[in-house]
Image (cartoon, rainbow, N blue to C red; front, side, top):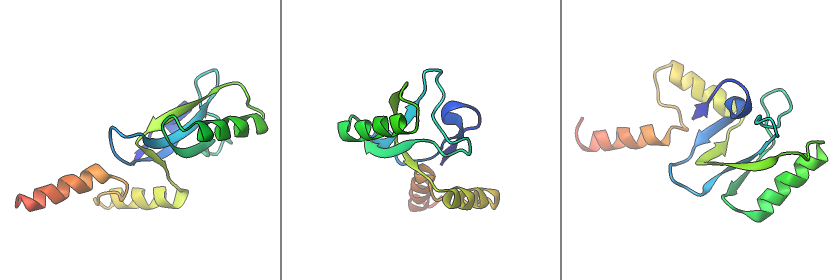
Length: 118
């Protein structure tokens, strides 16, 4: 799982699905480069495949509805939406020295290591 602190995508809680994929999340980027949110870390976003014109239209219409028509839809490949509960659970697992559920790469590496007898 990825959580980066700061402005723009940095407060967006996302989970890495896989690398080099057309599956991800569109977020609404404001002209200044930050992402549109409610101020509590909840960003205007929609799960989508890259270049899905219907989803791009949906997020554009939603941004206009919420008073932010200026900006553009930005695709975050390999990311998925994560609830606050899922995020908290993954933090607990990391703090306990366990692999977070959302870290697919780590789970794959661990499985491969076990197959090799490591």
